[in-house]
Length: 99
Image (cartoon, one colour):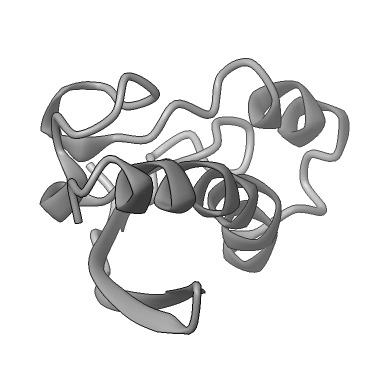
């Protein structure tokens, strides 16, 4: 099992700031396997999420990751995986008054 850093991320939507707990685990097979990004506070609030708050990256980000191994790292996963997911999901969660 790899290391599991825990941080907080911030997002802004309609001039409101939102802060979420961020966790990810660097797998033993890194860099061949991308890590799963977990937002435990949003667990169960959107269909684009697996159990435990893991966000769905398989359709869009994993093919991009596999083409760019071993050049991609943590910053790429957050910028190209988490950021678009947050940009799509946070406004819908706000509109549905789930956050």
